[in-house]
Each structure stands twice: as structure tokens, then as C-alpha cells.
Amino acid sequence: MFRPASPVATGAPLAGAAAAIGHGLLAATPLAMWAATRSAPLVLGLAALAFLTAGLAQGGVAPLKARAQAILSSPLGLLLLAFALWALVSTSWSHRPLAGLRMWGEFVLPAVFGLVIAASGAFEPSRRFTRALAITVLLAACLLGYEFLTGFTERRWLAIDDRQQVFYFNRAVLTCLVLCLPVIDRLWRGGLGLDRALTGLLGLVVTILVFVSDSEAAKLGLVVMAAVRLGFAAASRLTLAATGAAFLATMVLAPAIGPALEARMPASLRSHLQPSHEVRIDIWETFGEAAMLRPLLGFGFNAAATLQDNLVAQAISPPRRAMLAIGHPHSAPLQAWVDTGAVGAALLALSGLLLIGRLRRLPPARAAMPTVFFAGSFAIVVVAHGAWQGWWIAVLTLAALLFAAAPAQAGNLEGRAREGRA
Image (cartoon, rainbow, N blue to C red; front, side, top):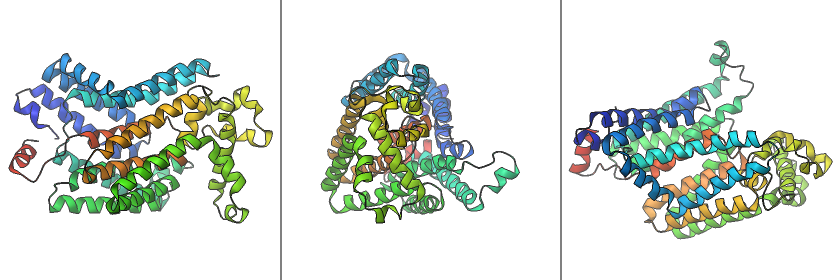
């Protein structure tokens, strides 16, 4: 199992067993997402319960509470907490407040689980754990690739699903893509030959999966990740600055992107777009118009899901009003504007800029992959699924936990001894 060193070394068998269960659950996340594409919050929640047990058994309530307070009182923690509270308050002026509250719970719970795991003091991803996670990502990627190539015939034969909604499996594809980044980062830095070979195989298999999948968002994310990594190797500070500028511009201009594309994109270019891409421009234009009807406060958290039922939204021009029934703008920055207004969008923009600022203070070798993760994940949510979906927040939370954890050492005797006890 994946037992961290510290609980075992101090003779706390319950803490060690609970932490081992927590690490095992986290390592199983990619396969869980392959089997059930919304399961990441459940897995993360069970892991958080295990880590909470380990933390309480190891040190009691006081250390855990102190670590949680330190995380929440940090500038980034305060900004994210402020956004969560603003989103909660915004449900009060939503036309569907109960639906907004349910989605708020789905959005916040994975972040709370991540906070519990980080504050427990029991999450210590060893190199062995990271290898196990790499293997489960590989297995999930191979299974997904096989199913995409064969048209999900086994699932149809087993009557698991009629597979008319193949895009549901894009969630598992995105899970593999996002989680492979911290795994590669942790295994490559200070890794031995076999670890680096494993990272190369992992990157190759996930890349193949992305291009055989149905996820255009994953393809865009992968291209952005590759571009940012190459840019970082050539000019790290310039790449960080460009990433921050692109992020801020997208957050600020999100309501105007759809109308601008509609007005300025040449007809010759638009005629070459895939139908889904052309429809997406229409969706962005429609929801951008809606965002400007309530630019400061928004319509309320998750109001975009049923915005066609909102009386204010009836002011949208009739040809585009039908697009509101899509359910979300297929752009997280635009959904932040629609649901939480300029206030919510500003809180998220400040959070992202603060994170970029923290990355600038790290050595380039340490900041490279977190920057790739930030840029690629943001590129995905600019064009993809609903912003507040719990499976996505859970996957991002797990990746963030891995990036934030202390590097697993393998290049010295102390690291090898710790590895052996894990």
C-alpha cells in the first residue's frame, strides 16, 4: 500500500492505515473516472475522510485546525473563500435559488475535501505512490483509447449505456491529461532512469489518447501545454508574463469574445469551422449578451443552467434566445460573468494573478510544470464544460495537492530510506 513514512515511524498504526487507504483511493482516481465519469468527488471525499482520520489519530484537532487556518488565511485562500461566499450569496437573487445551492455544494465540496487532505498532515505522496498513480493513469488512458477506437462496443453489449453521449468520456480523458502533469513533474525531478522512462511512456500514451478521443478541449489544452512548456524552456519569465496577460484578458473580455468573433471573423474562415465550433461562437455571443444585462452582480450562481426561464433574459434578441437552453456558455470565464457578475469574475481573476505571482517567485525548473498546468487547464475551461462541475473541481484539486506537496526524493540515501518505509 501507499503508507507515508511519518505515521509508521512514530508508531501510530491507525494513522498509518488510514493514510494508506487515503493514498490508495487517490491513486485509483483515473480508473474510477474511466468507470464512472463523475466519480472524482466521491473518491476525493472518501480519501479526505481517511486522511482526516489519520490526522486526528496522529496529532489531534489542534494541529489540523492550525494548518487549515493557515491555508484559508493566505492571500490566495482568502480570495477563493471570498469567491465561494459571494457565489453563495448570489443564489439569493437567482430565479432558481435551490438549484443554485445544490450546484454550489457540488462546486465547494471537492475544494473542502482538498483542504481537509492538505490540513491533515498525512498526505505525503511518496515516489512509490506517484508511480502507482502514473500506472493508473496509463491503464485508464489505454482503456479509454481502446473504447474510443472500438466505439464502446463492450459497454453496448453489456447494456451499461447506449453510448449516444460519447462526450461524457471526455471527462475521463481530461482527468488523464490533467493528472499526468504533476505525476510527470514529480517523477522526473530527481528521478532515476526507470522513473523518467515511465514519464515518457505516460506522456506518449496520454497524447495518443487525447488525439483519438472526442474532446476538442483536450486537444486545445494539450497544444497550449506544449507551447507553454517550450516557451518556458526558452524564456521562463516572458512565458509567465504572457500566460498571466492572456489569462487576465480572457477573464476581463469574456462577455465580448463571442460578439467580437461573430462580427470580425471572415466568412471564408467561418465556413471552414466544424459545426460544433460554429455553434459555440453563437453560444458565446448569446451568453455574452446575457452577461451584459446584469454586468455587476450576475444572475446568481448556476443561473446559466436555466437562463431561458429568467424574465430578464427574455430581453435577449429572439434569434439567439434559443441558445440559452444549452445550459451553460461552454466557457468558464463567461459563466463566471453570467452567474456571479463582474464581482465574481474579478475575484477569480485576482486569484489567478496571485497564483501567477507565486509561480514567478519559484525557480524556473520548479515553476515550469505548474505553469503548464495552469495555462492548459484554463485553455480547457475557456472552451469546454460547465464551470462549476464537481468532477472537474475534484480533478484540479488533486493535481494542485500533488504540485503543492514536497518533492519525493530519490537521489540520496535519506530519500531511498523514506521510499523503502513507504
